[in-house]
Amino acid sequence: MKEQTENIEIVTNTFEKKKVVIQIEHLKKSFNGKSILKDINLNVHKGENVVIFGKSGIGKSVLIKCIVGLIYPDSGLLKVFDQDVAEMNPHELNELRTRVGFIFQGNALYDSMTVRENLEFPLRRNKTIQDPAVIEKLIFESLENVGLVDAIDKMPSELSGGMKKRIGVARTLILKPEIILYDEPTTGLDTLTSREISSLIVEIQQKYKTSSIIISHDLNCAKITSNRMLILHDGVIRAEGTFDELRNSNDEWISSYFKID
Ligand SMILES: Nc1ncnc2c1ncn2[C@@H]1O[C@H](COP(=O)(O)OP(=O)(O)O)[C@@H](O)[C@H]1O
Ligand SMILES: [Mg+2]
Image (cartoon, rainbow, N blue to C red):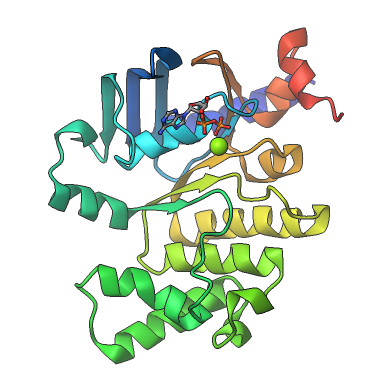
């Protein structure tokens, strides 16, 4: 038992020594007088996968939307790659969003576009890449990464839930983001498909050395993907540790999150 704990600490420390890519201090956000995020403090290190766990409606999506400037916090510090998000102009925000991929809850694929067109979309918006041969190469490369090259000319309606999710991941990967924010990547998928998507998240982390925040309330997904896990509750991060540290915690409140209901 003790030996295992020591091992885990070494793994955690490996990331702590790395550069901080997301720095959040005393972040607060209210909506219509209701305080959602009260005092969030969180650093994400280069190469690290951080899972944020928490009940529905607790503010998980709000938190990651703040990171890409889709929602502005009321106060607190929020820096991504050492840059203060609150001070970014529209051009800088655009640039930030090419470096930080966001995989929204649900699939958010454009239903009227083929897979190829869906993948082209971020490239066309990000006008720096225009050469058709380069675009073609990037589309194939990102489809290869998610194992779906054959789906290139399909419509989203022809794909299963898991395949749509993979295309969503491919579309984010196409801009080679350094950070990926996954909002509930396995919600609505069956157990086997959830596991495949969770493994894909780890493959991407290892291949591209991306740093990620993964919002989830799927225990299997958290176990597979997390280097560190946080529990968000009542506007603050109430618990933090590796998956096993939290699961084995003597604190009943923490361990209640690990009971399958
Ligand atoms: N743009 C918004 N305007 C007003 N209230 C919002 C907005 N976005 C989120 N909220 C509220 O903030 C709370 C947290 O939402 P959210 O972050 O989506 O929860 P979850 O943890 O399930 O992702 C909810 O009560 C939600 O209604
Ligand atoms: Mg949410």
